[in-house]
Image (cartoon, rainbow, N blue to C red; front, side, top):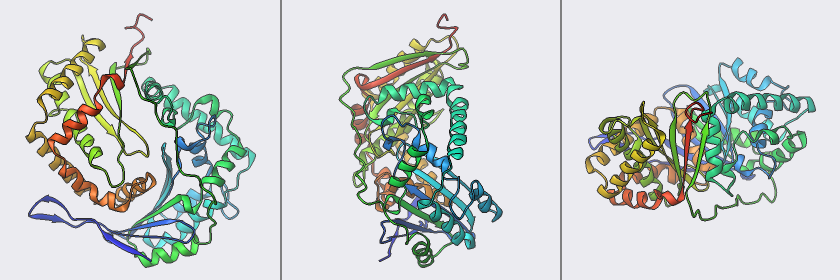
Length: 444
């Protein structure tokens, strides 16, 4: 049975209603969840498959296998020669790509609406019929090692982020980089890839999102034709990951590198994730991040550090709660010339402490809510963005109702709820604080 849902209309002003997306969902007998988002303004469609598996689901000692498999998925099947998948899509005037996170792996194509049948056939084909030659695996492993060299090992900021993430999560696999540790990537082989693929790449572990100039009945017909015959994985285990033990003391680290152009202080705290049916705390933390550091001119940290005391070149705050498990809340301050990292940290602490004492400025909260509402309205003009919003949420255990309720959950947050979240999360005893500095300033 197909269920049709309409998201509540989002309002920029009370007198200016904005039409929301029309969303339909159904599930095939083999377990594949299908979501259709209608947008008939242009004859274009976005086709995405989201697998509920990511880097945090990898077996111990096999870090990077989720990302590795993402690359290998372009190596071909019985029907599509190696490397031809993207060529076929591009020959139709479309584009495609894929990406991996800790919690999911996604593959997408954007094509003319009348090419949906073709891309659905291609994607369904490689869901269960991937063919890997030993040479393919060896070649792609070298590509990923080079990617790690270029994007991580050659970038002190990326290395620093990797180290602080590892310090943040002592037991949970979020502490392991998505790309993997180099020494473990070097050991990944064809058997590792195929074992991971056969277990997790299955219709009952996936969400298909089709957004654009499409009709639900036609999408259902095509999904039943191409994905319907695929066998599910029997006995797929629940996604139970190791949890973090209580943190009893602040963790600190300093990293120095002569390639660092701008030193900075970074602090992160464990923070509750956004949960299905109970999104209020995540919404409060989202607004807290905006209040503290969402703007380079009007946020608390910007006003205190950049303009009042002039101790920082910039300061920001960020909440990452769109995760399956416990997320993080982060602060970053880059000191002004002549200001040490210790002084910048002290100024950051003073600004946060003052905020915890003074509370939320009601006018600032209202302004941020208006800005968020406007951003959500503009985002509805982006079909790919809509597909991403629903796909990521569903892959992380949320529901369509959660996605549709989120704008109003944000608008309903009170100043008291923001402050309660701030007092809960901003505890130095449960923080990780890091300095990224230049080697010269460290006397090296």
